[in-house]
Length: 119
View (spheres, rainbow, N blue to C red):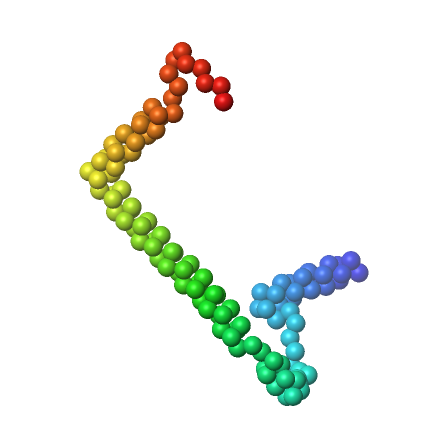
């Protein structure tokens, strides 16, 4: 009996995982659907404020476009940086420039010996 229960449990687990992966865990046949009354749909549609819908659509589209533009720009910058870093001469020039800036920052924030600054 235990062998049957194990097989049944295994089979059920596989079926559930299969249905989830196919997104068919819950399915309603077309003929079994409950129709929504037409007058309800008409009433809901007539109560919509189209200006509010347009405003929300505009905001979402603006956000989506801003994200897409930013992602494209980031990709372009990344490609430019890769090209610069592939060129040995440009890479060394960039490193030299950065070392100078890092030294300047370090010098600006260093406290000379003998001075005591309590913050």
